Image (cartoon, rainbow, N blue to C red; front, top):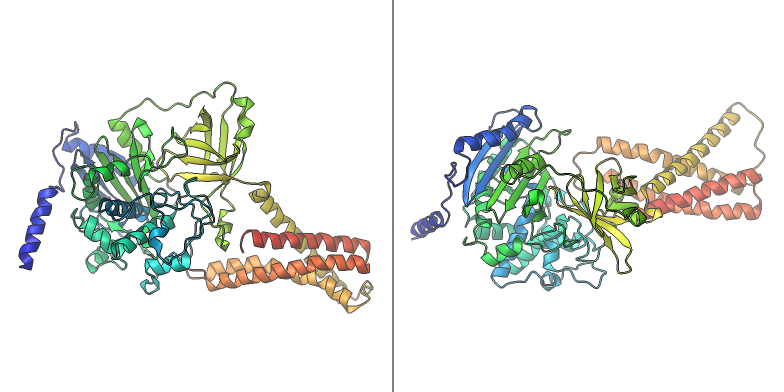
Length: 620
């Protein structure tokens, strides 16, 4: 009978997973009361300062949930208190660990191997890879596939616009812009493609595979990737009042769960006898699979590696409405999961403080001190100086423009250290050489300078602290943000001057001043007027863009209609600009106007060439 089969299944689960939602007894020196005091001290202070309005937390040690608690409220109206048992939050990018775990399960079943070429499973779906190096499954789960970054079309506000994963990637496969396996570039699409491959191998949707092979066996009954959510979970998620979009490449970000459910996952990931992940799988998951330098942290499978406090830790963070972190010390059988909601905009994310406080409690180390720059470094320091750009941006669409501010400079300090500074101040860190090409920062992260086959430095990899591993590429002078800002300023000076000349001409006409006799023919007259027309269009375009941004429905998930019109207008203006530059040769040949006007027209034409190049360069 069906009910008897279900009862046997429940009994089996209870026998295999004796989870307890209460504080368990353990060999840990902290008593139940001390746990409460310790973790309350971490959460209550920022809660009282309104750094966040609510948080859920679970701490696991030695195969048991030692402590779990909710802090504050799920919603801003303070009507629903946070509970670790049934308060549902989006995990955001922590979702990315599940496609990786699912692939490891399929490898356990003999259905795939992490070294397989991804094209083996994609069928008719094309991978745009110009390199001779193949993209392997291991590249997808270590963020080293080399994908460009894209945003638009990835999220929708209405589930009616959701696409199945195979159809989404058939239409929206991002380009491979970095040689696979050579650089790290955090990728939503890489994680989502892992989910698609799970789907193609298993023959069932990824959300179903995750439910049947991970969530159900671990009794994670409040966890799901479904979009829209099942009614039982949908009612709970609505309590928070935080609108969340629907994700087309959904395995990258759409998982919802509770702190208690994540505690069950943590236990399984640190128990080599669990029935979900084999001992061999866990050993592979929690071992370095990729690193820019063997002497720095890198990537496990789905997890990022941390060496904070001298411990071999693995973690993942998430930021999309909620802010979450899962952190595991597999060798020490310690792990925790935390999620924060309604984080104030000007607040520092509290995840790093939480992680550091826990590590200091269990594995205290003397306060970190920066090493002294090695002798002789000054002689070779200029090799490391230069301008870099964070490599997580689009190369093939107009979204490339979002890479404009992602520039960093690396300069030598007087004491023999290097200063790495991101434009706008997002990164400003002092780094000191530990060994050739490997540096340590005053933020305790590792910085590896990467070289090409000719031995020239081509980029930097940053790993080790509790943030996403970051890759930067060394850029040429014509890629420099300041060069492009100079182009923008130069263009606007020229179009503004041309508009002023037009105003002066109109005023002369109004007040009946002496007629301008420079124009002998209508062609001369219209050739002179074309830059004024061009200037007017370019001048009003930014204001139209701002107006469109102000009036368009937000947030943006697809390219708004007004923006599509702006982009089309820019393409037309670029063609118009090039036609003006060709006319500059004609006016010199025909000796139109005065020499001064011809020189001015030629300078304006040069500005238009730069305008067209700017549009082409940024794929606008």
